[in-house]
Image 1 (cartoon, rainbow, N blue to C red):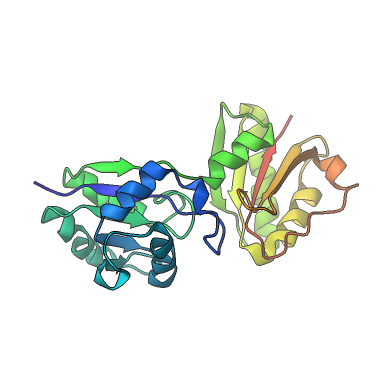
Image 2 (cartoon, rainbow, N blue to C red):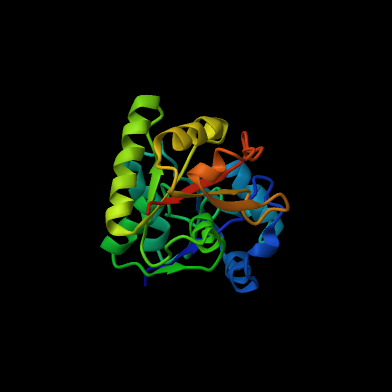
Length: 237
């Protein structure tokens, strides 16, 4: 029989200090595994050390799957599962396969009729929607928007029209060092009545999440969120 692919969430903070946000049931399964597919071995080892796996870290098998992994390398990642070994898929932060290259392995597992089990843990996307007060019945995650200022402005205006027509919450992320540039684009591109939420350092002691209209944000001091993980959400009226 084939093994099971377990999708194991990780804490959202970069220091992996908030392991208490990982349910004990998830940790119990992670402790039993000997094979993992990870985005970066160094941070995965740091996380697994906190998990306190049954075997020493040196005896665990860690294979890498990231944005540089080629399609022809996926078969080797799948092989332990085909051989009957359970495997844990880890992301750098939050839930594997959501805005994460691990989705490639999950898709391949389904094609080979391998059981996939997503485990409970923090998702910054869902936490941001929950805390925003925006429409949680209809929302879409857009990943990263264009880095070029003109292209980003054009995209924001198009998304705002879509949000207004469909009453849909739009959310996306940005490379942390470009947070302020993104906020500047939002405030200059969106209608003053559009509600905008900024969610920073979710689940961390420094967590900030606030929703105001664009017009109200223009009168406020922006959060000090340079190089801090953030999500942006808006809903046009």
